[in-house]
Image 1 (cartoon, rainbow, N blue to C red):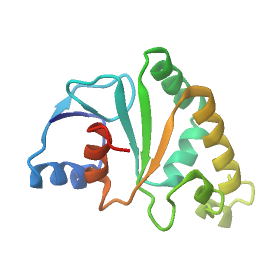
Image 2: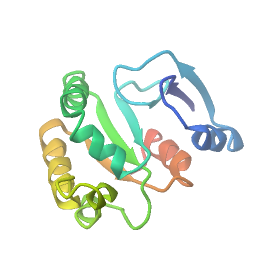
Image 3: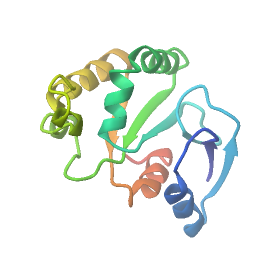
Length: 152
């Protein structure tokens, strides 16, 4: 297995260290059209890693148009886009996202709630065929390998 990593992917040493410890070849690629990781021989399955739900919230709310274009581009190219969220702390599904308490709510009562974020995620899943997956930071490298190897 050879995994290509987008060079714009930041703070991913925990992922690449997992690859190194387990003999998984990986190289940086200049820039993907969408996402952060893909297996060299399969350009139709791409993982976009998110560090936590706050990052997802920023993508689907503040950067909605850009994020929507990325998902639409993936759909048009026949790419299965898997958004892998490293949140951990009991978040294992979109149903769990409903109960998430956005830390920004402490300062701004109009910040996005977990219920709203879950609704937006479900809509994007239905509209663009995006697959939302959840993991912990410690398990992220392993989960990337599993997904790119065809594991669910």
